[in-house]
Amino acid sequence: MIKKRLIHSIFFALLDGIMGGASWSLFFAYRKYFIESDKFGYQIPVELDGNFYAALVLIPVYWIGLYFMAGQYKDVWRKSRISEISQTFTVTVVGVILLFFALLLDDAVSSYQSYYKSILILFVLHFGFTVITRLLVASWVKYKLRKKHIGFNTLVVGNNQKSFQLVRELMAEKVTQGNIFKGFVSINGDANDHILKDILPNLGHYKLLPELIVKHEIEEVIIGIDSSQHADINKVTDVLEDQQVVLKIIPDVFDLMSGTVRMSNVIGAALIEINHDSMPQWQKLLKRMIDIVASLLVLIIAMPVFLVIALVVKLGSDGPVFYKQIRIGYKGKPFHILKFRTMIQNSEVAGPMLSSANDARITPVGKGLRKYRLDEIPQFINVLIGEMSLVGPRPERKFFIDQIVQIAPHYKHLHRVKPGITSWGQVKYGYAENVEQMVERLKFDILYIENRSIAIDFRILIYTVLTVMQGKGR
Image (cartoon, rainbow, N blue to C red; front, side, top):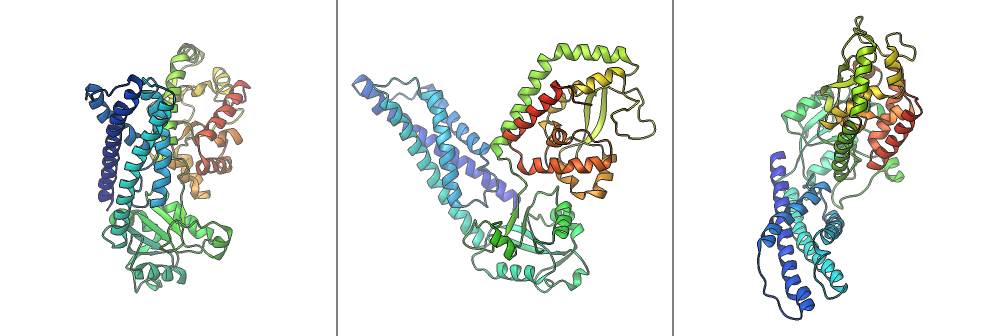
C-alpha cells in the first residue's frame, strides 16, 4: 500500500506539471493575440521560439516545486476535496504573483490594465485546470478507499468496550475511510482475554508494536483507551515515538465538549489524531535553507576568529584543538559533534561526566570560550552537513539518555527533530549539571517541538545572541 501511495503521489505531481504547462501555453497565446496586439495595433504571428519550449519544461517544474513545498504530495490518500480547493487556491495566488514579477513585469503593454488582466487570466487558467483535475483525482481516491480497493493497514491498541464498539462500527460500514484492520494488541493483562479477540487477530502485547508495524506494514494505530488515562497513552506513544504511523485516540464526552475533536469527514467515526508535526513542509525547507546560508556565512566571516581561537587553544594547554564527541541526533542516529576543546586532555578517564560551573577540568582558555559560547562555533559544520540545525534540542550522549529515559521515557520525543546549536531549553533553563536538571529542561524542548515554527526559531536565535553578547554562557 505504501508503494502504491508513492506511485499515486508521483502521478499527482505529473498531473500538476501537465496542467501547469497547459495553462501556461494558453496564457502564452493570450499574451500574443490580445496583450501584444493591443500594444502594437495589429495581430502578431505566434512564433514558438526556444523561450516557449524552455518554459514548457521549467514552468511545470516550478509549480510542482511550489506544491511540494506546501506539502501537497504528502498523504495524498488522506486529503479532503475541500482542502484541495483551499490549498490549491493559496499556492496559485503565491505562484502567479512570483511569476508576474519574475517573467511578466517587463512585458510590452498598452496600459497598466494589461498587467491586471495578465495576472487574472493566468490565475484563472492555472487554478481552473489544476483544481478540476485534483477534484477528479481526489474523488477517484475516495471511491477506491470506500470500496476498500486501497487503504491503511491499521492496528488497535486497548482492551475496553469502547474499542470494541469502534472497530465493529468501522468494519460494518459500507462506505469506509480506508482502515484495513490487521489485528489488536493489549495494554495490560492477558491479551487472550481481550474483548476484540472474536473479531480481530490477537497480535500480542503493545511493546511488540515496532516489530508488528514493520511486519504488517502498519500505517495507522488507533488507541482504544480513554483519553483521560494519560499514563497508558504515554506508554503507547513512547513505544511508537520513532515509528512513521498516524496515531488516533477514541475521544470521550469531555473531549467532544471541550472542542478537542475536529470533524474532517462527514462519514466515519470521530477520532482525535495525535499530530506532532506542527511545522508545515514549506517552513521545514525554509529552515534548512536558513541553516545552510547562515552556517556558510558564519564559517566564512568568522574564519579569522576561527583561526585565532584554534591557535589560542593549542597554545593554552596540551591536546588537540577540536574535541569530537558522539551524540544522539535525529531519529536516534549517533553523530560526532564538534567543539573547540575547553577541558584538559583525557578529562573523562573515570567515565562520562557533566561539567559544572566550577569544574576544575576546564582550562583558563576554555572558561573564556564557554562564557561567550565561542567553543561551539565548529558546530556550524555539523549544521552545514545536515547533522544539526541552528535551533533544536541540545543533543546528549547515550550514557545520559539511558538515565533520563528511566525517569522521563518521553525524552525520545526530542529525536523527532534535528538537534540544534541552541534551543528553547537552553534559553529558558540554561546548562544542565546533572540528569535531574536535564529532565527539568526537557519540558521546554518538548514545548518547542510541539509549537515549532520559523518565527519561534528567530525568537530563540535573538535571545541566544543576547545571551552570548552578555557573556552569560558557561
